[in-house]
Length: 250
Image (cartoon, rainbow, N blue to C red; front, side, top):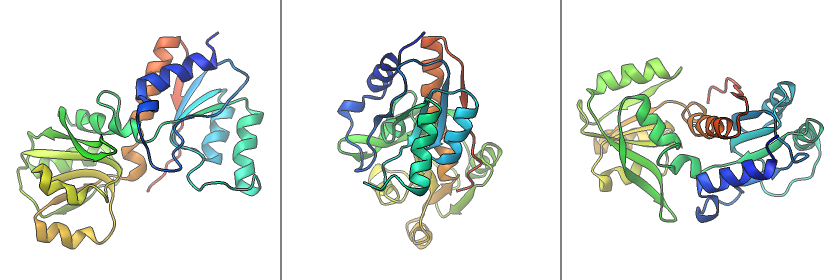
C-alpha cells in the first residue's frame, strides 16, 4: 500500500514546491496528514467543507487542492473552520495544496492545459511572480469568433470584451484571477487574454488599449492542474482517483 510520504515527495518534486515562491497564505504542500497510508486519490479546486465531505464519503484519503486551508491566516478552530478540520480528521483524509506551482507548470499547469484544450501549444512564459511565470502565451490559429465559440463549448459561462484584433496572432493564458495580468499584455506584445475573472475596471481599459479579454470562470479555469497531478499520482502509485466537483459558478 502506498505511503503518504511517498505521494507527498512526488508532488513536492513534480511541482517544484521548495523552489517556488507563492503568495502569503498559500502554504503549498501537505496541509493535513492522515495515518500514513493512501488508498484513493481525489482532486478539488478548493479546500472547503463540502468538498471535504464529498471526498470522505467516497473513501478518498489523499486530496489535492489548488486553494488550500490557510488563506485567511490564523483563525480559531470554531464554527466552519472546525468543521473543515474535523471532517478531514474523522475521514482520515490527508490534504495537499498547490497554488501558483500548478498555474505555472510547463506540463501539468492550468495555463498550459488551457491552451492545449484549444489545440494550441503554450511556449512562451508570461506574467512573472518572483521570477516564475504565472501564465503562458501560445501562437494562435483561430479567428476571435472561432476562439469564443470553442471556449463556449468548453466552459459554462464565458464573458468576452472584444476590443482587440479579430484574428489575434497570440493568446495569453492566466487562469483564475487575471487582474494582475492585463497590464502586462502590452509589454508581451499580446492583445488577447484568456483568464478566469476580472474586475469591472478593466472594461474601459480594454476598449482604450484595444484588447480582447475573455473570462471563463475562476473555478472552471483552475480544475486542470489538480486533475493532471492527481492522474499522474494515480498512475504512478496504481491507485484510483476522481475529481470532486462542487459546481462553483464563480
